[in-house]
Length: 461
Image (cartoon, rainbow, N blue to C red):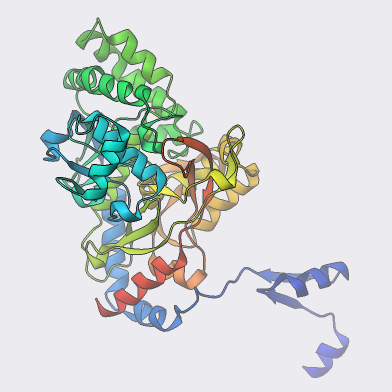
């Protein structure tokens, strides 16, 4: 063996650091590269215990099976006070629970706008004073109430909510209606045009959509999402095909239900390529919720950000949040904005990645790179890398460019820790100063500490 090594052709395997491999390449030495990364820092001891848990394999199969078999149906559009029991001064928000004192600029801006919209304050200054005092004000996470909200995700009693039911497992989830892009409440804007739009949505858009759905019956969102993926959407930052498919399904019923208002409603939806996002988020939420509460499961059932913290929840760990600092996305900026104008990541829309969409489906949407930056090859690489940290491939959500392979679905805390790979998230970027609105879009990584903390907790579960 020693003589073979001295006089034979060397067979080289490189692992980890690229320096050796690059040196061999310059010398034209054939080599085989092994894609290996060390586990997340500090995760080794807990990882060994979690991987050895005899419940894990069966529990994860049960949990991810529930997520993938969910059949989300858009069943109605109803006021938040009716379906969520919100009263005056009660607000839900995106991400883990947070107080006014720790809230970021866009979160404060959205809460200020919600106060104005609900008539609880006459000026932004009065709204901020009441929110800071906490008198008569209650804040809670949307996720605690079967709800998700994009960006700041603020939900107030007068807002109308999309209602999505799981026809397979019986759960229900809610999400607000999408306002469009630019200066909107979810990005922390609260100017007169924002409040006026919200009032129109409450007085016209919500009731018209509700009446239309009563006529055309429940809409199969799973099928719409599957079709949209094959038409170039990834269902987080690109929803153009999904919105078009939704309009095709519901437009006749809108015309029949409200002929006097149909034109303005359809014009609003047509001018908003992100209109389907909120329905897709509720579909992902009800699917992920079906996987909750399986003892021993290390499946992630929620990822969410409030503009300050990034948090995850795990199937086998109940409603506990495991958090770390929210990062600032790396991407493309609008107009004269730049990284200094960006707020840390915010929103519940990472529920799409949790269910195998968004950043996990970027290979289906090559055009997304024009919105978040990078090359088409980066989008494909992002999706293919996520198969390493997920438990399954979605049977309905398939990617044509990968030979109709199912999207990677079911993030496993243990696989994240073992590979050192963090979930890929593509996202909009909110301005850090309240009232600014959207300043760009890009990619962001969750904090690794959220996953290692969840791993530690699994050891004792």
